[in-house]
Image (cartoon, rainbow, N blue to C red; front, side, top):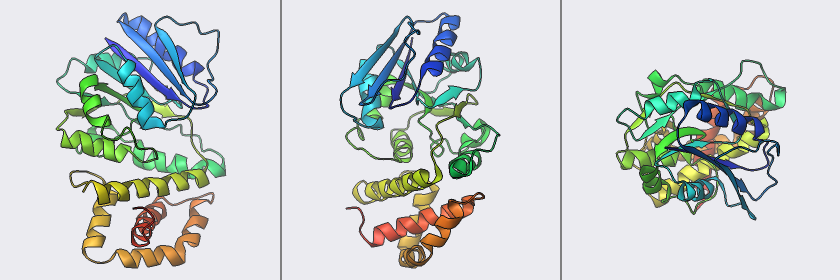
Length: 296
């Protein structure tokens, strides 16, 4: 009935797997858990000898997109539950909530993200603050634009729908593909519904690393904008970029990034980073990268 698929890379997934397995067992359904260790050292407590659970090991890292595709190909059930390694269910009814959702006429369900209220150390604040502001969103809000807030760390999807969409990006490595995945779901008229079935995001990156990932995500958007057209989407950043480019204003934001990126970084890496400044940094970097042909 349900295949739970977890790609991992150098992260201890013992507690996650144990919790998910216990919930699946309590629900008394047919299930399997498949873990793909993607070219790293698997961190899973050997004492967890769990039924219907198997591990696949890659000798080389193939990236999250391709890893999910490989997991889907090995799954034997029609419903796939994808979970990132660095998450943990917020509710003890997490699996039950997804099983209940299956009875409704939708093809993909996104459970959402949650963050603990305790403020982390300064070097992690940017990721935590952005997550609380832009990712920790109730389902009622997400359903107003169902293809906009797509978080692939926690979602349930029909196997045939996933295969039709993900194969279009499976050979691409990088960061920031959730936006593209959402656009492809929209292109395929997939029936998407959001529910309040969050997982806590535990693997928060340091601010400097996260800022680099946001830059990479912007480059990913530019790549698909230039090569795919990427017209049918709900991404606010790309919409703004298109407007600026159409009105010949991208050069102005590019210039702003050139002269003020160090000032913006100083704020973003501080003890009190501004999400608004992060958004300004992202759009100005995107314009700068586009104008300076940082990606073909």
